[in-house]
Length: 386
Length: 96
Image (tube, rainbow over all chains, first blue to last red):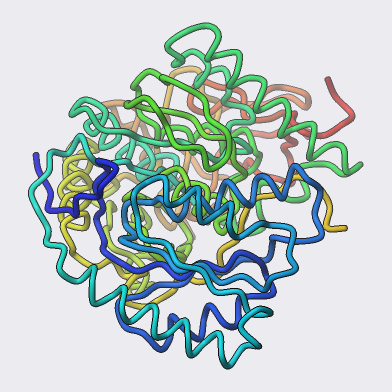
């Protein structure tokens, strides 16, 4: 099985070929957006972080920005910094440059304000787009796919059909030598014993259990009960009663492959196969984490119809809820309702997902890419804003 | 054939409803390759769960052959099993 991708100097393979305009701090978002809106072939990433945070979070934001910049779907990168923020733009630049990519930066306070930064940024971005437009797609084996797994706005059909079918596709990618990244540790709660059993070693199993314990304790440390937020109101309306029920359905998307390693939020896997990444379940943070980890494609199952994609990683939207499929045509890419009708099996749908992933990896546009429903992203932080 | 409801394992005391059962007194539940006829006691919404047997207050609710919560009230067969009669056992702060 092959797809048509873009070869990068560090050996990674992209499924898209954008110039990324990345904001290093919330205060540079306006300039970042203006440049991306003005130059075709660019894509922006904006967020709410980068300053007035604890050192552990500034470190996490810096590492995540480096990871995003290194993502193989970006051919080159333009960083937009305000100048006085805690994240050090030169550190981010050097981190991304280690992948061999061209990286430029603009500092708004140094250049003399937003208007000059936008003008200079547009000129730099145009030059970069011109340069990267020469890169052609080539044939690569499916082992070069780094698949991010996500489910959101889940209902009971997610756990019964969409996630198990995605699990079959994930197993197939692993079998072909590719990588599959499972995040959403909150949604291991009540199902962690199953994922821990899937771990290749006892040590990895213990790391998984420890991550879940930390996530559960973090929620409890606020003095509140996790039940107020998980499952969400929409999940409950869709028939999911408890976090345990939601989790048991959610982990089915990881299939049955052994878990080969556990990584930090946004950390790039060094091993292939199925890996676990620490992250919460909320869309802006997990999608960003998967992109920073180097995922070149993401599969996202939904019951009630979560609309988000990601700015530069294609996100395949899968639902097994026929009502959602008909009602939200501009957001859904694939419908698996035939299991309920008795028309198709989960295995048939596992193959359909695999085919669709290869087509999208080769350039077929997802609904989220077409609608541009991709911009409200953020970086996961653990401490307070100070 | 269209599945009206599904039981995922032998141990489960709930089934998931996958059709609109409004106004129906009974429906067919898929269990592996078998189909069993079951009586509905109240209208149950698409995607929601139905009790398959008498569930005592404090009993575990079993789906996927796993515990998904605990009954806070006695639930009779044919009735909806959801947040009004089930509680989660995780992330609460008041349980170990």
